[in-house]
Image (tube, rainbow, N blue to C red; front, side, top):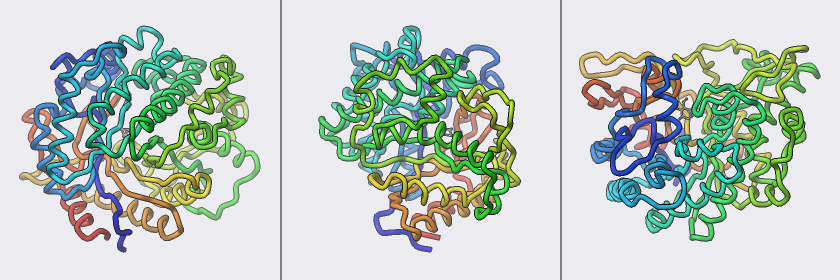
Length: 456
Ligand code: IFM
């Protein structure tokens, strides 16, 4: 099973999840510092204060990436390192870290894929309303431009936002993520302003000469329970309508504005029921519809729903009235997420048909399991099986015509898994949080061989 020539193999991480060094070199406070330091928000009271200490160990981490033969490394820039208050003065010491990282990667023959926003909003901006405030979108564009000005001579691949659905609906809807707000109207506004920020930043990046610009979304096929194990199952009309609505809220809410300059009717209806659509100003959709080159797909599991007459909307899903979120008949990871590899090929084939104007890249895929470090090895056979199963589906999607450019595993390192803290391990490299030593798991060695063979 050989992948196309030039298929990009790599791994992904995010700033707050691995860097640590939260008070160094002039870094400002982010919403995740505030949130994780508030008791009750994160399992075990964990914070990103030290995380994997990547800030100090990045050279060793890049050396490890090289040993694993990664061709690409997707990392995110911490906005509060670059602009401690989220606006105005740039902190050159913060930017210098990413400068060193990019140079180290390039010297190792690894292409940097820079994500500008992976959820660590400067707290100063949250104090002024965060993503519910339209101005944050403009501040984001300024920040994006500043990062590009420093790294753009060496970085080709840029992503604006990581998973705006999660940032908006877990951050402002059910409050499980920072900033921990729980207001459906705020969540709808935040989603729109994130998109506006994406469009503004994409335009600035393009004007500054960025070659490849991408928006990264958490997407999934929305299936009825019967469709999980039987793609040919035909749902009844009520279940199909529930699935269509959730698909609009999860995927089309972001990709339709970004790629077609319009919101799905279901999203406008959800906004109408939750604070109205007044925050969507004339001209916004045109800005959001800035030309981009790639859509990054973060896939972990399908979303399973059926009709649930009379049920109220889920707090993370404004507009999901009368829908039941159902369990899938499938094995699960340590996160409790169902393992449905062919959900990925179903998703990719569908997205490449619906959005043929862009290429696709798997910017995250992976799984948490309860790994055990045993005599210097981690025999994570379940992760190998998860990755193997999903890569076969990636290959299947390519054979069916999906324009898929690469696959980045989530994650390079075990790291701070947001509200789950350090107890959930997604890395292909084990991190001992006491000594901070790294040990490649069996999955890392397996992935290295997949890369070497350009296939399975
Ligand atoms: O750890 C996260 C990542 O930050 C965004 N996508 C999903 C991963 C696993 O939950």
